[in-house]
Length: 219
Ligand code: SAH
Picture 1 (cartoon, protein in one colour):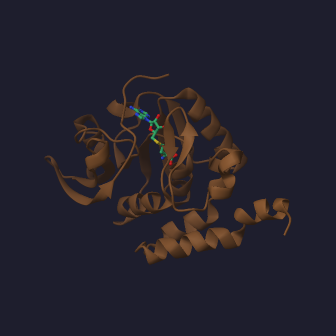
Picture 2 (cartoon, rainbow, N blue to C red; picture 1 turned 60 degrees about the horizontal axis):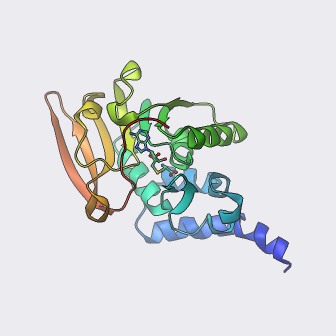
């Protein structure tokens, strides 16, 4: 095989299928999530120089000190978010590469996604356009306070870690809605699912994770 063919091979259907099998082996069961991940070309969400590693189950740098999440974590968070039935509108805080957004898009009616770093958001927008995904609304803003003008949401997914559960986000969930997010400092984070109740919220720990921190302000 020539090096060129090898390069193409690394992003082939077979390479993707291996990743999906690995996710299954790791316990991901929801076929809606597995199908969406099979159909989402992760190599388009990383720099060309890293495209050959796009179907490894690992986080990769996307510039500006940020990372595209590990596929297993994307699968787990998506599964946790959509488990209890259909969702109309979702808020994602931390667009990053846009990969998680693109995986969610076919599973819900509309995804609102916010990112504080403009160059990352612009790249993600171009990827959504290239893939003709039309139910994503992007905003260049600090998502720590949510997106009150579009609230309430059926679900919220946060892909950067605050130190605790942000109440501003809980308040933007409709009763019965849920939020999936990492919480805590870098080496001791947990993935948490929050359920909004009529008069407050409940939460459960899912597993240990390692995300970049949720930061304030826009750049
Ligand atoms: N889901 C993304 C993960 C990107 S890393 C992916 O798979 O590519 C988390 C992202 O959250 C980073 O791009 C970071 O800039 C962004 N972020 C951190 N704090 C934020 C905030 N307060 N508002 C919006 N985006 C934020």
